[in-house]
Image 1: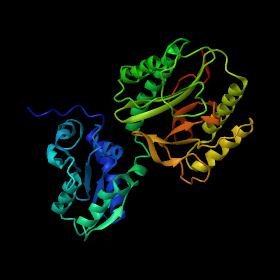
Image 2 (image 1 turned 180 degrees about the horizontal axis):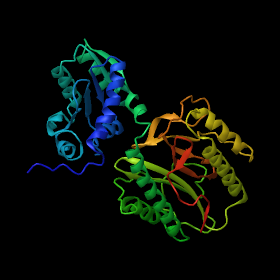
Image 3 (image 1 turned 135 degrees about the horizontal axis):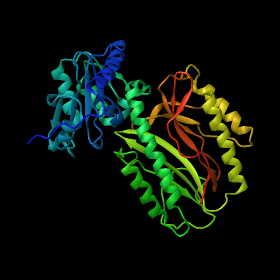
Image 4 (image 1 turned 120 degrees about the vertical axis):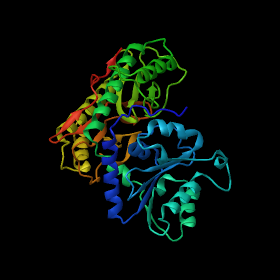
Length: 389
């Protein structure tokens, strides 16, 4: 029996709207076809969220076809039939003998499809930065008459401005992040293993909030004493003790969309230095919420944030935030000095005030925000404080 099509997260019209924007960019670059291999961009264009990008796969957008064509491994094709919005004939399964084959792979199937499409001597966009070097060379070698154009971040920039439907999904993800932070405040206690606390936090990320389950669990960073001077360490086998500080970063996920959140926890009173650092970060965050609005640049916002933190006697070396959406990080706009990206309504950012100033001293507070027509909507809603436990 064929696998059924599941209830789509977004209506067909939403996917066609996204494709229309992509095709407009293709026409601007004089491209007849675009090969999309970035996992998050595939999710954006099709609704497919399965973890299968460790082997060759690609979505081909034709300037002249309404729906894209998804080419992927045979064993993963039923998942595409189930999740992707396209009709079944727009999903091509390549055989399993192309896996682990030193001579041919799934990218050969993509090239063969481009030839059948009749664009082998036309302009073809390829996300070269998302491909292994040998695969990128294969497109050039097997399509010698084509004009291969690097479109590595073309779709990523388009998806940096969300639709209202996407914002709704990100609000659901943000509620899951809030629930996970509150669960952390319940389970972090002296004598509890970090691993056991992590299990409870991750369980909340999976169970979700407000009746909306988490549809994937992102890695969490649980940096506890004496590892609070760094930011991306996972939990350990250690046990929390009195006087421990814990910096936690996590992200709730709904249908690929992530809302990130960071908070600091202290078993007992935090040190004066940590409290002052947290106050400085809060000042930077408040400045960001007052400053971010359409029309200014990411660099303008970052400068105001840095100055606010410096008034409290600290210097933030890392960026103040970055574009967020499908798959957590969207590698486009950053809230850092010199970034001239203009802020637009429905851009979303992880507004990240975390600061690590010594090898064993750091503190973290962040929010996921949306740029509105006049300012900012904060999507996450956990108490903005050091949680003293």
